[in-house]
Image (cartoon, rainbow, N blue to C red):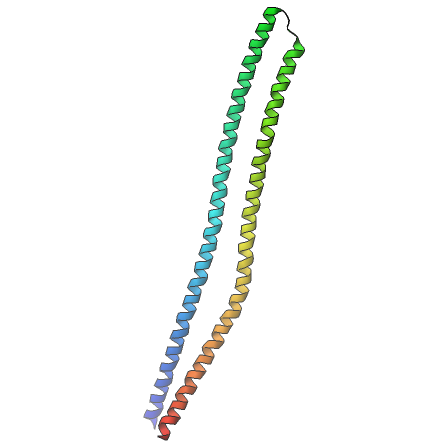
Length: 182
């Protein structure tokens, strides 16, 4: 009698091992897919941040190029205005108001050209900052939601594993009854 009980216990252990192995593999696959999803999200956020960083550097280069252009045009205006002043002085018709007006006009032109560029650059920067913040908020929100669902699904996996073990035991017992009656 003791040898049959031992054989029955070994058979029950084998079915439990099989069920545990099956569900362990499923849980490992589930964990791998969760980790892969998190890595993808991190890669997405890093890519967004790198693009924003590149764009900021590009805007900085563009601003320095515009500043250099502005200095060059300012020097050009000074050269033209001094040449104009010299010509006017030669003809003795120099009026200080004309010189001041010319300076004001050039300054106003610089302001008019600088304002749209500065506004555009500022708009781009704010858009990118909002985009990064929105992306981070979205990823954090989806993670929080997913963590809640993962807890629920983990409980379902545990319940399914236990049900599977019980089913395997019942099948074994039914098989034993069927074999013992023959």
